[in-house]
Length: 250
Image (tube, rainbow, N blue to C red; front, side, top):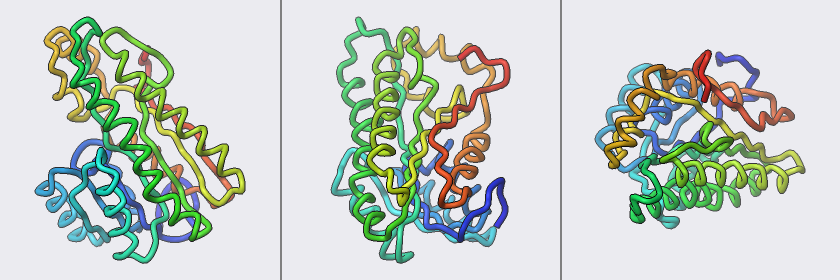
């Protein structure tokens, strides 16, 4: 087992939004460190390719199609991970969308989608895995927020609101798990290479994002932060990690 911390043992890690970006990078990193990864996303062709890649490199991986907006589907995803590996030690709530637009554009469908994926998706991950972790007497939730969980910018009001919510949910869960059996980590990336910006339908917001993303972290940098939190000894709970490009104002 390699890494910056000392892991007690190989863990079973369920990752949502694992077909690209931070999710895929996290799967590669954690599998390389000896963990067994169970991958979920809607694009099963990508999940299949990533699973094959990890196995070919000597890692352990499996996947299941997943829609985080559907609680029954998330519950089935976590159950499938438990059935395959016997337990679920870590859930990485990574699935997210970022359809930016000014509020007066009235893109209500996009607002609803943002709330469904970014907020309900995290709550579904917690609800699906918390009973299992309680029964095991241990577990770890890692939820991906954003620097938008700490600040608001034009065109990003709804997106930032969703990430403020993820931050609040994570802190509430941490406080409710003070017996020390379940750890809670919030990872908040600054601008990072991903496909999130591809979903921006508003022309002005899409153009503004091009300059914002001129300097971006590789997804592997966020995967490294997640691996650090996961690798800590059981008595160490890394609560919040903010990762920005060096010199970034946001």
